[in-house]
Image 1 (cartoon, rainbow, N blue to C red):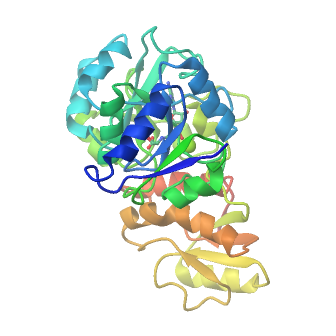
Image 2 (image 1 turned 90 degrees about the vertical axis):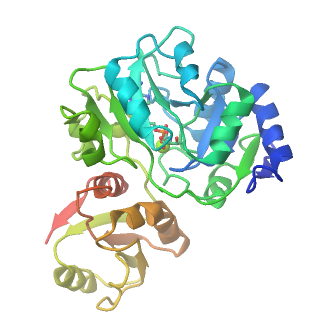
Length: 343
Ligand code: TXA
Ligand code: MG
């Protein structure tokens, strides 16, 4: 399949390309689009065939439900069967933005979008290109991250091309994603509300609207085998580069000592900016140590870079858990398949 590359950097001057993307989506095709979190692989949420093509193109397990993207609040009416007061407050506070709500779903959505669950995940992105595309189509768009299932999520159009060129109808080529990790997922279909995936909206921000929110076990720990999980996506090894990642929990001095003792061909270190000095192995850096937002913005690119540079085993620094650090930690520990060595 020839994948059309549709450049949309300026909504006015590139509007023809956005029209083309819209045409493809309306006729049941798959289009990768930028969002403020990561690039998404979009299809009409009402088109069962198109939705099943998303799963096929990504190699995604059928039991992992998709997020439905909207551009205005009225679109919710056809998607959910009930809208609790808390959900309205969350929508007012966090939309448009990197926030996804799980609510009881309406019958109008094909079961495959929700992987057979009685709920649906919904998000209103703030990225202007995504918002305009949804609004133009007049359709809610089901969109998981636009990567091959299991590999690091795509934060640039180049990442999408590397994973999905030839497998989907078109890619909207635009700016790199600002946030760099996926949206925060909260279920309001349970009481109390539950954080299923940390992301661009922090736990501290959530607590301002949802003071009783609880953190799902799967956010920080490895899900137990053969047990049902609240958010199916959390049970898979995820975000992983081809190289093996091991997190080393300790101070910088101990980190350097440990890594240097393992120095050989193919061994790399994933460190914070400016920490390269004491290390005898090649390094890739992922943001400032005290600034989790900068770590989130570059983490997935850093994981892809390790593969490009021929890394076979990578020792990684451990981010702190406050603010966006929770999301960075959650992604990194999955990339490491939960392997953490305490120094
Ligand atoms: O930022 C994002 O959320 C990006 C962009 C493209 O919007 N999308 C994204 O989609 O990350 P995906 O498919 O890679 O991750 C969706 C997550 C998965 O962990 C999935 O299990 C969870 O949301 N999810 C979706 N529907 C759900 C539901 N009904 N109940 C519980 N979890 C759900
Ligand atoms: Mg994903």
